[in-house]
Amino acid sequence: MIEVTALRKRFDGGSVICYSDLRFETGKSYVLLGASGCGKSTLLNLIAGVLTPSEGSVVVDGVNLSGETQRRKDAFRVAHIGYVFQDFKLIEEMSVEDNIGILALERVDTSHIDDVLNALGILKLKKRRVARLSGGEKQRVAIARALVKRPDIILADEPTGNLNYAIGRTIMEELIAAAKGRTLICVTHDDRLAGLFDERLDMNDIASSIEEGGDMHV
Amino acid sequence: MFKFALKNMAVRKSRLLLVVLSIVISAGVALLSYNVAQQVSEGIVSTAAYYDMIIGPSGSATQLAMNTMFFTDEPLGTIPYSYVEELRASGLTNAVVPFTMGDSFNSARIVGTTPEFLEGKSLAAGGMFAEVFEAVVGAQVAKTYGLGVGDSIITSHGLNTAGTQHDASPLTVVGILKTTGTAYDNAVFTSYRTVWAVHGSEEHGHDDDDDDGDEAHEGEVCAILVRSKGFNEYYRLSAYYGGNAQLLCINPSTVLREVLDQVDLSARIVYLLCGIILVMNILVISVVTLLNLFDARKEIALMRLIGISMKRIAQLYLIQNGITGLMAVVLAMLLSHGCLGFMSRFVASMGIVLSAWAIYPLEWTIAALVFVISVLPTMISILHMSTKEGL
Image 1 (cartoon, rainbow over the protein chains, first blue to last red):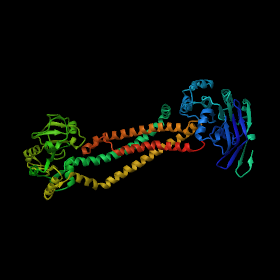
Image 2: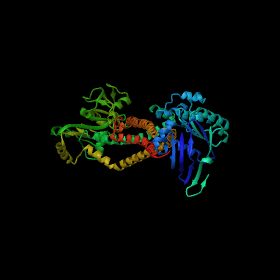
Image 3: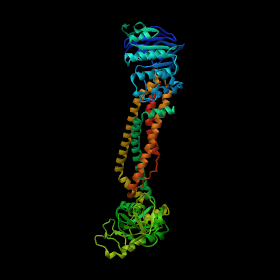
Image 4: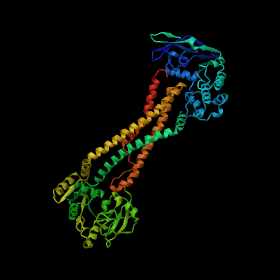
């Protein structure tokens, strides 16, 4: 379970995003919907420990990540969180296999890589360089990398943002199927995909931004 | 980890090649320029240190030193051979070697002397000259003119090929020197008595233009090379012969050091250029490393996002940059010393010895500096990134 309490993130320009208290149940899939700039990706990054909250806390399965050092947060992310990015975050020059195998540097067991690639229909691309893949194939590789370590939590930031709707929907379905039994929090601005998830959270309801010393915007 | 580092380098072959190449060329030039400067300076001084005194007719000290040490320039003239006997009889010397020069075989100069002059040099074939009209030829002379033991050579009057040939007095090759990488390779050595005999028998056959007055006739030598028994003996001899207005008595090391000092401005310019080259090389290496770092930072950020710890990332880049730096440094050393070996062939005839195997302590320092420059910026950047909170 992920518990978000009194979470605030202050940015250099003086703007602050404030989040309502939230609970994400284990084994359920959530979709965060909202327009660009409303704090969807920031919330994911705060949960993943990529960003440090200015105030409040993120507690994952009883561990308060907000109070931990960056090294501990990195270690926690490797062990428990699979992260899928909109722009894939793959090393273009390397092969599919090596992009996933890189996790072995952190002693992640990647021995079942073929099963994961097979489930996503990209086993035949295993030896191919990422630079030679299509956008849809790259996103499947990114999902495979997130899944190969069998994480408790999967965070996906606009995983279909760079793809057309048909391919995007297919990939989203594959992601939800692969994440069965785990906590999945997915950010998207595409309302048409929201029906695929167990729970829908509208950013307008859970986040507000203020300028420090100024008015609050919901 | 090591396997992954190698894979990561392998997928960037072209960039890696460019990085290594730019470092190799930059560092190679720096290493080469430093090594050449050192070897030339040391080589001149060590060659001169073989004898502590040279006595010749009055004139230019530099000319006397260069003529007897490196067989360049013209002899100053002649002095009586009786000085050789006088020096030997003095009991103050360990070696007294007469030196005459005046003839040539094609482009090779004929040095009339005693076998002592070739002390320390090895023979590739045959033996040392013992009789009049016997000669030992330098390795390059033998190679260029296809000479072997038993062959005859016709020498010419004067130090260029335009002189009258001594057809009636051919020399017989009795030995061939091993390659020395010095001016000895391009000279022919015979007894000073051979020079006397050639000029004595053909004295009346020369054109007036040929006779420049510097050649040694019977009872004359161009110079005497002396190794005294010690400091006291050296100063006694120096005082005695230095006081003779007809003679020039020099210490070759001192003269050549003075020559080096006189060309100090040139040397300073050369060193300044070497310094500029070194600074430019450091800049080139730094720019290449920083450009690499720019790419590396993106990759490091990506790896951190997917959860690779900074410790692992640091290890990975240390291996990658370490291998790159090490490869570049080793290749730069090989390049600079390969060039030294190549250059040594061309400068040997000028009396400059360049050894491809000579390595100076500062070269290791330059190599270490290059290695550090190729590794350090990325490691500092990783350290900086690791201390930042958030990603």
